[in-house]
Length: 212
Image 1 (cartoon, rainbow, N blue to C red):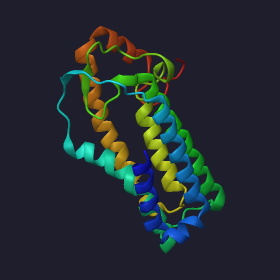
Image 2 (cartoon, rainbow, N blue to C red):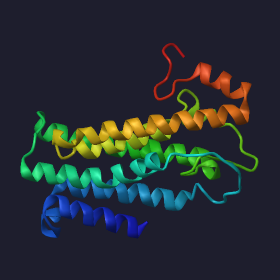
Image 3 (tube, one colour):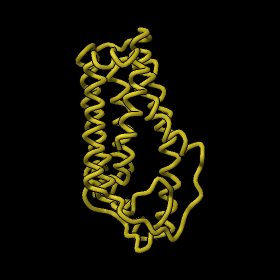
């Protein structure tokens, strides 16, 4: 966790213009605090305690790379664009701090989803031994709350620096997530059949179904 946080801090420092500038940038420090708090929660929860995959499904390497790299570099690039004054979005400080709050909320949702899945959570598309279909908690009305949380966290980090120049990264991430989700849903339907189809009928992919 400390290594990841150190990398995040180093990348943000590059974006804002150095270590001194980072220490003088309240929103960048607030984002680091959010990431540190979330990382600490995950370290304490240890949602993925064991992994025993019995079936692994083909994945798209480009999609995996995008889902890893975009959240990593988006805050740095957004901070860099803010420093250069590229395409400032309207809203000023209110938008910037709303972005920090959105990043925190998205990260929290991501953590809740990971905690609910426990050892079933995996960066790969695979089924664990004794894998059960999750339909409770944050999965009761939405099938992919973890992806929603990750996307909101990334969008919030972009908005925290108020530059529209990197908003396209949020779209790229959304497209990569959609490609990944389609493969995951095909794997879940193959594994759970009618149970998954009934679950899919009563839930939304990213947002709750109206009236449900």
